[in-house]
Amino acid sequence: MFQHLNMQSERKKMPTYTIKDNDKDEYFDTICTWGELQLFLDENPQCQKIITAPNIVRGGGPKSDGGFNETMAKIADSHPNSPLAERYGNKGTHKNIKVKNVAKKHKLVDVAGQNVTKHYEKNKTTGLY
Image (cartoon, rainbow, N blue to C red):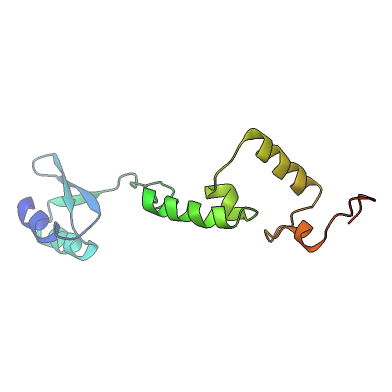
């Protein structure tokens, strides 16, 4: 009786419903569409759908593979001051990380990822830009 309902719907991703057969006092799980479930319950009045807690699937979304991360790292290396470089780029040595943090703190690198010091040259005698 329940096999027919499951065999029709297994080829697709469907929700799982719990059904109670009141005559036999048994519980069954079935995978089907809402319409198929309603048709089954109409044809089998001794059965009723049991309300259960929803199955909530959590996750951060699709995970990226190594090839994607490698490509992003190459792009980040080409743009070392970008937010992309912070996420995927080579972190470098402890000294380089400290230098980058000081440059951000003193706004020597703007948020768009362009190095502002490239526009000016420091005067060696006065120390000014």
